[in-house]
Image (cartoon, rainbow, N blue to C red; front, side, top):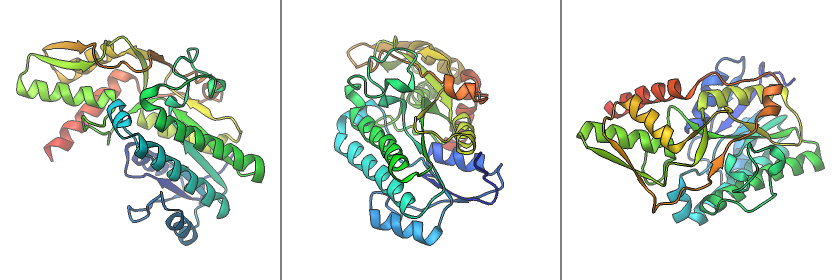
Length: 310
């Protein structure tokens, strides 16, 4: 077990949805949380090296990334692959060079092949072609996993990786040009309710199946892994519950109070037809999520309304 008591823990990407959840969760531990501001461009190895030298963290959680939905990945592929490659490589290498005791790298479920057997086990990595609409991001995240494994193999670094399922929660991105499906639907339905529209248009058929996890559950799982896991294989982190995009939209419309119809635009891409993570390895260690989807969306909608009223 890695004891967090008295440790200096750097959460990169602390201002994002995942990073801020990690900071909240770490406040329950007897440790010091370190963060870096935007002047430390994580794509620049010199700046990362200088920050490491000045702050000397004992442990690192890499939550920083350039993220976005299908549209963002499809229209800005160079940004998604370059930025994420550099962010991952710089932090992992400089953590090794600085003698960091433990590192947790956060990837994404999109690392797996588009048609991977369901539910997706960790061993499915690199067994087939990726989903084309977000392959740029996926390749960069796969490289991060392999970097952690390489530094463990060559140098004995205690570097581990976790692959979260689709996340949502406070601090999510609600920009319709770059957001993921859950926050995009929530914003669309809220605006439609306020404007008293009769319908909301939703990309795709509504048939794809997805798994969602509240970001506070992910943060709790990350601290559990930081304390209890030290192996080469990356670890899936999921809720184990899947729902169709159509059912997700209906749940959100109920929470928001939108009374109109849902119109599915089948000319738009669906993405991967089904994506459910097999989190058996993590669950067998004694960890489990605590927030169900309806309660989580209700919590997020309350936060969303507070934020837009400020």
